Image (tube, rainbow, N blue to C red):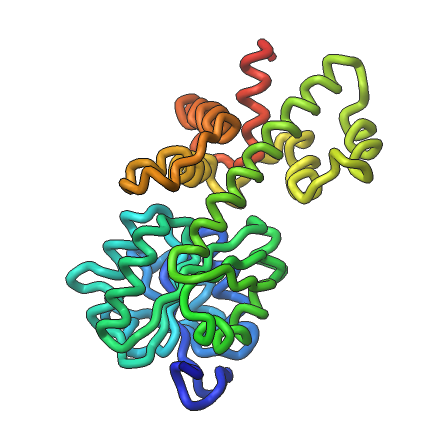
Amino acid sequence: MGTPHPSPIAPSQTRIGWIGIGVMGAAMASRLLSAGYSLTIYARTPSKSLSLQSQGARLASSPRDLAQRTDVVFTMLGHPSDVREIVLGSDGLLSGLNPSSVMIDTTSSHPALAREIFAASREKACWAVDAPVSGGDIGARDGKLAIFAGGDGGVVKWLTPLFEILGRVTYVGEAGCGHSCKIANQITVGANLLGLSEGLMFAERAGLGVRQFMEAVRGGAAGSMVMELFGERMIGRDFRPGGFAEYLVKDLGMGVDVVEEGEDEKVVALPGAALCKQLFSGMVANGDGKLGTQGLITVIERINGK
């Protein structure tokens, strides 16, 4: 396969659709509008799309309607169940896609669902790419997301002009591999957030200035992108979400509980991820599931009686 279309992607001829305009999705969609692409949105609550409409976005009445009016459709949703409904439902994207159209799911979703959607899209002569992202709200706003793309390599290459507006794309393999890569990413991020939370808690109790501590270690082995993105937010008690804590529980669960997929040979013992899931679940139990993932420090503080 060469490309799904005879001509390259360009603002003058490629119609973009977008579903999912939360913190991340709205910032990503805005970047595509700023790059000159025509954008059609479907939103269950149309009033939430007013900012994007002011930039030139148009509204569709349903996912099916949106699919009929676009060539490439992005989704950025909350849970795999949302993806299933929006893509495979009776009035979903797949029911309205034109031949050779492409769906790009940037949700943190399940690899098995991505494979199911890919197979269903091929039956309709369309394409599906699973391309979850990492980098939070700052990365989405600044176009510096890490994008993990799974699906047909030729389609991913054809989509590169769009991905480059959003960040840096890496092709990681066949359908489902993008979501598997994101789960591995979240396992790593969760461990980093836990380490940073405990490091800050220990430094404070030891009588160190927490900002001084962070400045001292950020250039060494303890430094990380998590520290750069979230360290100052933790210190400043800024728990506004770039990604919801409850979503990280979901993401870690897809790694820890992969046995539910019925593929026993793929099960990996992940004691660290299981602990992180338990601690982030504590955030949700405390009523803080809608806070940003950097709010994990509040759980460590509660454990320490702060």
